[in-house]
Each structure stands twice: as C-alpha cells, then as structure tokens.
Length: 135
Image 1 (tube, helix red, strand yellow):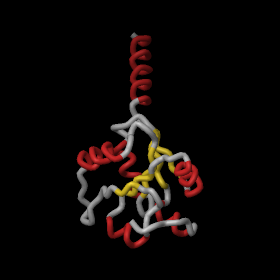
Image 2: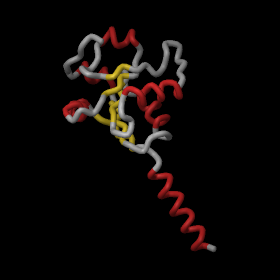
Image 3: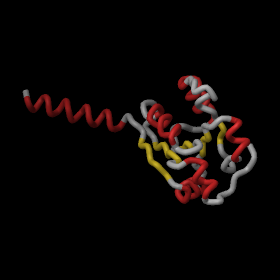
Image 4: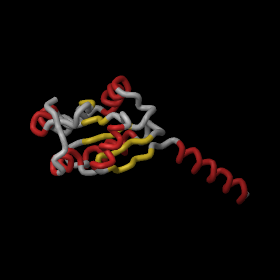
C-alpha cells in the first residue's frame, strides 16, 4: 500500500514538473544576451506606454491588459502563438515587471518551455540608458 502510494506520488511529481514552464527572472544584461541569441522580446504594455518610453528594438508588441485592466487570456495567447514560436524561449516585458510576472504564471499552465520575465521591466532598461526606438 505504501509502496503504491509512493509510486503514484512520484509519478505525479514527475508529470507535474515536466508540464510547467520554467519562469526565469532576467536583468538587462541577460536580456541583451538573449536578444543576441534571437530570443524574442514580447512587450505586453499598451500602445500609449510604447509611445511614451519607446520599445526595445525588434520587440513584438502585444498588449495584454487594456487600460481598464480587462484582458482576454485565450485571445491574447492565440495571438502570441501566431506571432512567435512559443515552443521556444521568449522574454516578456512590461513597465516594471509586475504585469509580466502575473502573465508568466498564467502562461506557465500552457507551456513547458522557458519564459524569461524582464524582472524590472522597461523602467530598468531606461534607467540603464539602453536603446529604445519608437514603435
């Protein structure tokens, strides 16, 4: 009985650990390294935010939360799948890293690949005087 429970528990851990994405917080230096490896950066901010601060060159622009806070995860996720290869790693970036942390956790249930979270967002990128361009 105990052996059977142990085996079931072990299988559960094995299955659940392989079905979730790895969420890795990254800093600016790491983002630059990932960009050099052609890992896409998905900027989830609003168009107003992109206009105010600029974007990291070659970013994929895909707003997640609307100005009023509303979102449609299924629709956004479908669009993400059509824009980038979500079977490969990608970086999520927002203003401060708070929204992308939330989204990373949502995505975590759908992917078994690596998701990089720009831990301090575009604010950190700008504070480090790194290049942005107009969207």
